[in-house]
Length: 179
Image (cartoon, rainbow, N blue to C red; front, side, top):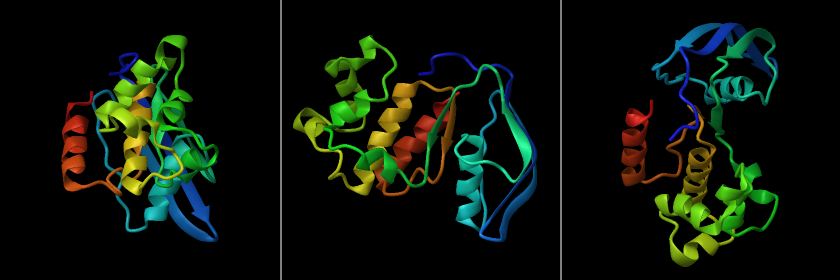
């Protein structure tokens, strides 16, 4: 679910460029995304994809160019490296996900457990420590976080990493249904 329907203008990128450690990752990126567009970012260099997502999610500056999100958009970003989300505190999964809630209604344990349950964390698994998760479990937590944010634009950098075939199929089906 999304909190708000997206308008016609999603993202406009003009002449975006980025280099890292003296290597040109990409240049002359121009893009104009409209409502209903779905885009896969593909490159021979996975670092270029990660830097592109880091820039448009506001985490890194571009060397050149600009981007502008539509006024009705809210973005949820799943980075390639999610380590920083899990190393800060030793929290159980309910408390880990609770830190991404927006209001008191969403902070209730039953509400949080519902999101974790959709990612197959049921019963005592929801009380598991966030510091001992496998790669796949971390990805499932990140998907719960994204669902909780109710964004109308999803940015995902290699979201199938650490997922089994059944989870990849479920993700593909969900993305096909996402507006």
